[in-house]
Each structure stands twice: as structure tokens, then as C-alpha cells.
Image (cartoon, rainbow, N blue to C red; front, side, top):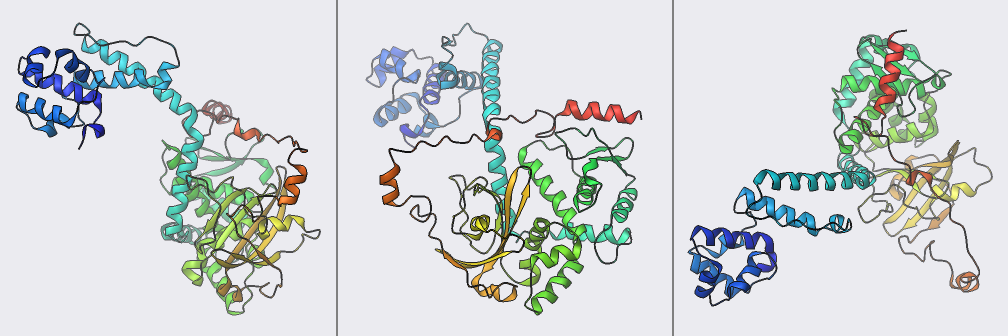
Length: 480
């Protein structure tokens, strides 16, 4: 370890510590190492980096090993506080405040020094908290996606739990009914209540004291929305979830409750039997899987990612893309080259314009799936894409496999083919030179602001949930 690799402030404190242990003044130690006391003072205060030969001479004069001087640990608790205070006061966070630095003196008590350091720690914590939420969430989500990729997006323990609960509720075959979901809740001592005033920051609220799961009335007409939200609420209890203390824990819980709901809506045995038969007939299709279990196209596509690799012996990919071309959700274990940022996150990244996930928006007739082969730097992939619309805009759902697996799917006969060389910018992001020359100095588009970028998340016990709103809601309904 060299002086350059050691923190100069810690080094200076360690030299001062050993010097005072030997009852030497700066001048006395300076004479032994042929260095002026003033120069030695600069080293002890972390303002000058000594030569290695000087450090060796100091270590010899003090009777300690060179490694002892270069240790990264502070020599004592007092020194550790002084070093930490120095670092805080040199940070841009503090210097931008325009406040003077406080130099610890011998007369400053340890308590006073600890109080100063504590204030700096809290200042740093609040500043970090204010800016870290989006990045923390993205980082945690990326780690979770990589973990699920290693597991082929398959969680056998939750699969087994769902099968047990379905069997206990008497479900045998076919789409899961609302009545069966209610029975599953009753077996946990819970009842389903539909209300008009559910807190905006919560998808559902479970009243543990009174055994109720509150759901929005918008789910009542049917579809899988009501069933899914009720199952997710039950999953928190079945999986033993506690209050999440980080975004990583929050996202892990969200993944697990969504997985449990999917396992109940499309039970493993029935789903695998259905898919295996379709594969045998070379007629795999998301739309058939969707209709067989009465779920949305997206839910069926996501469930395929859970089962395709483990039970159908094929790698797979899934994409949900907004009308602006940005990736909202994505999964792959077939090496499809998903766009990523420098942290490895895929959310918000633009997919290639040549992919069917984006070219599907250009079709006039969108009632059927779009089938397409796409040549990429990682190989050729077959995809089936279906578009949809929400209040937030249009979106597309794509599922796909490598070329050699397309033989099992309906739509494999398509002659539609595209070539994508992304992330090479010349593929679809860099305009042709003729267009660039013509419009570079004659175009000024006004960019659309994505409001969610500026919107803060509610602060509460649970990430993104407004505790005050939830507790007021429960208090109001518990007396009804």
C-alpha cells in the first residue's frame, strides 16, 4: 500500500498518535527524520503527501512498522470523528452552503465533536434521500430482473403454494372464478369489500384487525383485475411479508405477489398441459392461452415467461413497449439484445424501430397479432406482437423466441422480416445524412415533458404509499 492509496487525513492522525505516545514534539521528531517541524505539521494535518522514504524514516523513528502508519483505520475514536468531520466539511454539499469550517481543537469535547459529525451525517442522509429514490428503485429492479433471469423467471415454491391454495378452495379446472377467489379469502379469515374511496396511492388495503380486503369498484364488472388484486393482497399474508424497509424489498414483494396471482389464475398443471398440447400441435399462441384462462393478453404473455423454459424447454422473451418506443417491462433468457443504460436498467430505454414491438403501431388493422422475424447482431428472433390502448396511451405486448424455436408457434409462416443493427446508431436513431443536412439548421421541435420525472413519491412506511391517507381510510371504514 502506497501513500497515494492511503487517506492523507488518516495518515496524519496516525503519525500524530504514535508521536504523542512517544512524548515527542513536532521539532523533536523532525530532527530524527531530517524534516522541519512545520513540514511535519503539514503532513499530520493531511495537507501534504510525504514521500515514501520520509514515511519509512518516520516509522523507524517511532518504532512502528510502515504498515501501521499506512493503515486505513483511525488510531482512536476521537481521531475517527475528526477525520469524518474534515471529510464532511470538504464535501461540495457543505462548501456550497458558504459556511465556515470548524477545526477541532484540544479544548473541544468529544461530545461537541460527535454532535457536529452527527449533524453532518443527517445533512448527508437527507440530501441522499432526496435524490436517490429513482436510482435506488432502478438499481434494485435491475438486480431483481437479473436474479429472475438466472432462475428462468420460475419460482417453484410459489407455484406449489398456489396449487395448495387452489386445491383447498376446491378449484379443479377452467378459469378461476370470482367465487373461488372469495372462498380463498374466507379461508384466510378475510372478506372482499369494494369501496369508492380507496386511497389513490394504494391498489388495495387489507384491514388485519377486522379481516377485510378493500378493493376498487372498477374491478367489479369482470375480467381478471378483481381476481388478480384480491389474490395479490392474500399473497402478502401467505408469503409472510412484513413492512418493506427498502425499494429492493418492496419490489421483491411486488414480484412475489404478482407471481402468486398469476399461478392462481393460470395454475401450473393446467397451464403446462394446455401449452404442451399446443406445442405438440405446433400451434402455440398467446391469444389461445389468454382465452383459455380468461386473463389479459399481457398476463398470459408474462405467465409464458414463467413456464416456457422449465416446462417447454425453450428460451423466451417478453416486451411491453409504449407508443413512444420506450420499454416499460422486459424479460429475456434467449439473448435478445435489450437496450440498457449504463447501470444495466432497461426501463425507459428505446427499443429499435425495426422490431415488431414498435412497427406494430404503424399497422392500420391491429385486431390480430403481428408476426415478424428480426435479424439482430445476436441472431434471428421470431416475435408475435399485439397492441392495446389505455388512458395513458397505446402499448404493445411482444413475445418471442430464437429462430429455431419458432416452429412451435402459430404465425411461423410469416414472410415479414426486418434487420436491426441496434445499438449501432445508424440503424434507426441517426438520421440519413441527406435529411440531417437539409433539416439540421431548420428544425426546432418542442420536446414533450414526461411529468412523472418531476413528480415525487409519497413518503410513508411503505415505498410510494401515503400512510396518512391509508390510515384515515381504515379509521373511517372500521366504524362502518
